[in-house]
Amino acid sequence: MKYSRLVSTGSYLPGKPISNDELAQRLAKLGIETSDEWILSRTGIKQRYLVNEQSPLSTGDLAVRASRLALEKASVSPEEVDLIIVATTTPDRIFPSTACYVQNALGCKRASAFDLQAVCSGFVYALSVADSMIRSGSANYVLVIGSEVLSRILDWKDRTTCVLFGDGAGVALLKSSDTPGILSSVLGSDGQFGTGVLASDARIEGGQIVGDPFIRMDGKVVFRMAVEKLYDSALQVLSKAGYTPNDVDLYIPHQANIRIMTMVAHKLGIDAEKMMISLDSHGNTSAASVPISLDKAMNTNKLRKGALVLLQGVGGGFTWGSVLLRI
Ligand SMILES: CC(C)(COP(=O)(O)OP(=O)(O)OC[C@H]1O[C@@H](n2cnc3c(N)ncnc32)[C@H](O)[C@@H]1OP(=O)(O)O)[C@@H](O)C(=O)NCCC(=O)NCCS
Image 1 (cartoon, protein in one colour):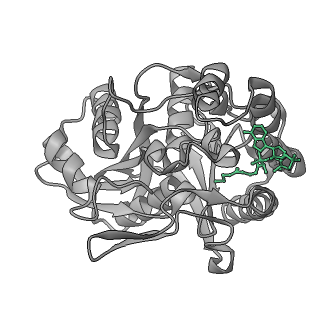
Image 2 (cartoon, protein in one colour):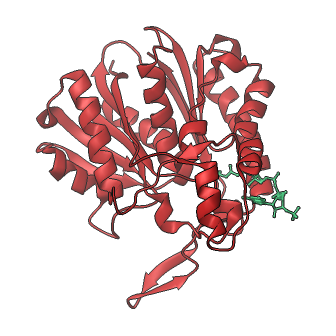
């Protein structure tokens, strides 16, 4: 019997952090009023990283940098990688996939590669797919990447969204093993809560952008849905593997809003100190948020060998998912 184990992680955030105060000053020049007090109290975000003229990086570039760190940490060569999955909402182009760009830039000559689109649930979806590929014997080493340049699809005149998001990438390197790492996963979707709730509702047609290309969101509906779906999904993934919330050593939810995260942890009965928070330092980086947070947990020694980790994503689609992982 084959299982997937986490071998290493990596993450990359572009440029210098931009504090809430600095962002508020920039937005003021566009006639938009916001403040550190509003952003921090409503979301828990203190700063974000954004690609810019000094760091003109693409989603693929961020993914490559984060992946190199994960491969180096594990002393795994690019040629050993069998599969690359890039979870992203902001691919570099319509096609070829960002994953193929990453495959070539890293020199993963043997790897197959594809992008996966499940918005902020993308990394958790990708982990689940990678786990299936490993369990079926189709892959040995898999790079599971979440990477986003969300700043490309932010309307800087819409203060209800532009203060929430950031750019970045995070990576988990998985390997086939005889001992279990990923214990269970649960994925879900409900397209009823699609374009009117959380979307960038545009397409390219005849060389033109048709529709609204910027992120639009009904924050209150998203908040309610996120709490409900994360809570249900957590209980499902735990019970599937024979555990309860009490058994969780570290909870790493999608880093979108501290109030959502705290509410779900509280409903589950998971102690606040068992919840990983990195949102304050990078904002909502969509598919990249969970792997960036996982990497931070690994780098700050919050995870001993054998620890039980609950990873959760939720977002546009509506989509959600949970993965239970033994380190
Ligand atoms: C977006 C969110 C932070 C807004 O918080 P909220 O408490 O619901 O705030 P409201 O939307 O009620 O807005 C309250 C007021 O703040 C204002 N406001 C909105 N954005 C603002 C900003 N950046 N700065 C200052 N004021 C702002 C609103 O215009 C509103 O003013 P009004 O009462 O005069 O109309 C919250 O709904 C949320 O976090 N939702 C989930 C979002 C999320 O996680 N999305 C990603 C999912 S993957």
